[in-house]
Amino acid sequence: MKKKLLISYAVLSLTFGSASALASEKADWGYSGHQGPENWAKLSGDNLSCDGKNQSPINLTGFIEADLTPLIFDYQQGGEQVINNGHTVQVNYQQGSSITIDGKHFNLLQFHFHAPSENHINGHSYPLEAHLVHADKNGNLAVVAVMFKEGKSNALLAKAWQSMPKHAGEQHKLTSKVNVDKLLPKNRDYYRFNGSLTTPPCSEGVRWLVMKDAVSASKTQIENFESALHEANNRPIQPLNARSVMQ
Image: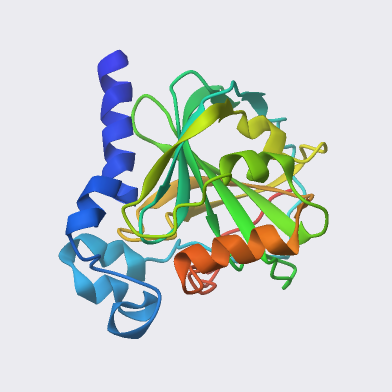
């Protein structure tokens, strides 16, 4: 089991890019121009899934009532390193935190952000969205998404972004570990759909769990994140096709 979990961590590291690699190599995809989302599937044979039928993000609407089991969160203080990987600002997490869904444990690997939000809810776009990325022992992925509305300062973001890395490849070790549980809304109700990674290689089969309630972040916090990326890092909304969004 330990070997499989280490493989899962390696897969996610490759998927989202390592800071050391990005420091010396030019990114082969982006959010604008020739390297933008409309061309991702053409940029590499590894990205063919970007033209798939079950892609993310989506506009969550037309909800289907379902008997969704409560998510079981078991998050510890484990966020210890913040990285600008050229596509987002990401906090890497120590092993030991997880969620349970469908009777399976998914270990928290990292959490990162998109501005503006990638997913929409009933057509509404939010100024910021967090993705908490998990993998089970077989490498299957589950992403918990949290929407942010502009309001009061967010205490967890203040700690995680205390030294915001401004350049691709830059990384900082946090002075004290953070607990991403503090990022979640008090109400843990959620929407669920099947989708994909929102970045190349756009792998499908990802369990998406979108929290219904938004949390707040200050205008300054949102602007600081935007300035670190220098451009919007949200993939456009993808067709829902035959999928359902459950609540």
